[in-house]
Image (cartoon, rainbow, N blue to C red; front, top):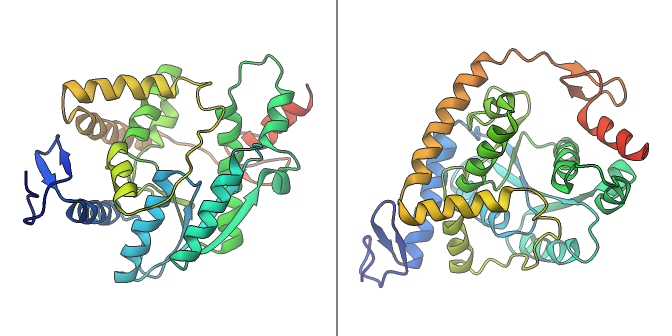
Length: 302
């Protein structure tokens, strides 16, 4: 079977579109699709400094690789930001991979740790939670977002880019739906160009399995070890469920994503959120105390 764009042998079949690609044409299609997404949702402006959140996984390193290529033809710069949660035996491999990769493509890279910012690691916080039904992902997500905000301010970036893909969006939507959290669904609109803090997801229209193939096709190294806490929540179960649907009904993920963006934009327009200043740390939040201060205070009181 030949590539639909050249005469080379096809290496990847995109079932939902019926296209067949060789490795080179497939990589170009990912770059082109990412560029269209950035343009469609006004994600990056001329002259921006883009802070790329790089964890060491396939998605974030592929994003760094793609944005570096796009930046060479457009007027913006990129810097890499890595958050060290303080998980023994897990983060070390990722830090080494990210450092080496950033050096190889000439991208500035800086690491920010939970320990340095909050005086405690994720592992230390998990030891404090006892039998409380709060997942490690919930705690980590709250601290990670604040650490990314600090890193972006410290590096002087204009926008934060994360490697979240289409599958991540679907999974997060279902998690919020099951939790009855419609407010968070309203925050899922990919167009954040009017926000004070612009956080973008250039891979939001690309399937996870395509990013796996992109990483392998471009010899991008990524962390092999999975987070030891990844199965505490229901995200893995939802991922497996959606993959089984896509296997039987090609393109169903794309259809669901289109529905989510419509629902999110409607809920976002209805959300009259009032921003306040945290009485403890001075950060912007929606309550009297921000989620970071509230989480750390609750854990330390155990």
